[in-house]
Amino acid sequence: MEARLTAKDQEVLDNLLEKVKEQTDLFLGYPVSKDFDYQALSDFLKYPMNNLGDPFVTSTYGVGSRELEKEVVQFFAELFRAPADNWWGYVTNGGSEGNLYGLYLARELHSKGMVYYSEATHYSVQKNLHLLNMSNIVIRTQENGEIDYEDLEHTIRMNRHMPVIIMANIGTTMTEARDDVAKIKGILKKLAIQHYYIHADAALSGTYSALIEPRPAFDFEDGADSIAISGHKFFGSPMPCGVVVAKKSNRDRIARSVAYIGSIDTTITGSRNGHSPLFLWHTIKRLGIAGLKSRAMHSLAIAAYTENRLKEIGIAAWRNANAITVNFPTPSATICKKWQLAAEQGNSHIICMPNVMQSHIDQLIADLEAEMVLQDWHHTNISIPPDV
Image (cartoon, rainbow, N blue to C red; front, top):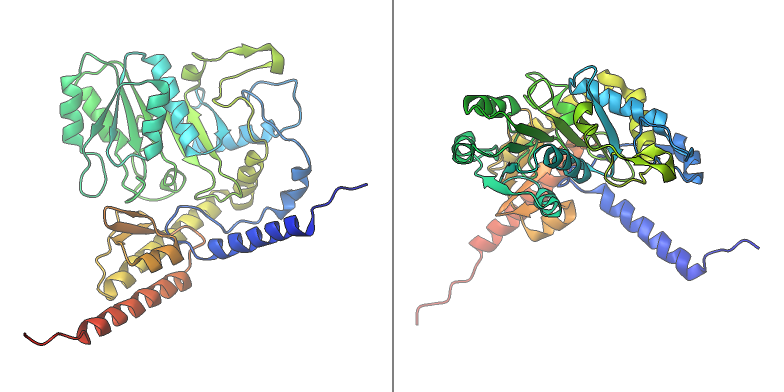
């Protein structure tokens, strides 16, 4: 006899689905793409796909997508100009795991290293540093959210006896500022630092930064030793995922053979989602470089439109060069809740992911204008008590 949900339990699911649909329809404050359709891959959900261990080493567990995962990693290795004969990587559970992996590699290479990262760095990095028990120093940021290179140089100079580990932001959480990896490497050369490691947290901006001109300095040719991106952001995925790419020579330093799975485990989690590589592979094959570049151009155009529309109604909006994040003063709690806008120190942002259209921006502008009219009405009609 087939087991079925009770009517009450089915109602719980139906209500959740309705809520998810409603909440997905209107959100502009978080970097998640929702314009994907993976119905063609639905049959794979019938199987326990697990990409155990290293994707480039065979395993006795055969129900997975390792061959496709390797193609995904190769795509990003080439996109990020990794050394042709010295790259490796895997599909992660998201950008935070990719950053953890980069820091883990850096720690194994430089056990006495000092980690430097800006105050605009994603909150998960501090958690990763705590987990890895790594010494670290926070560096000031410039007004736009980019790392303060003078403060970085001054702080490294005071600790020149220690190996340097850099956590570079390629798109900060709030303002999408990019730290210049080439400039950072120039500082290390100037200070004659011999032992260093540069990891690029490119969760949001990495993929499309490689497709625009002028190309920001963030990848392997610019000086990075590893790069992490999120797959559910610019690409779009029904579940969080990401990719980390590192130099194979560094990965070889930590490889460990595991008899149980008949492979070597060089990853953080061991058991890994075998479905996520399918989504990324499907998008790469379906869109190609031209299609991904088109997504990037669309997002940049919508960001420019958003910035101009906000300014037109008197809101002090701004964005970093070639960024899809538009910053402005935090609006009312009502608007923040409706559009799911994050707020930090009185500032909010709209992230113009590929699914965001002019119609979405026009609707938000209409909401903002309606509130401004209401506030003006209250201000001009406030009753002033007579003098006593």
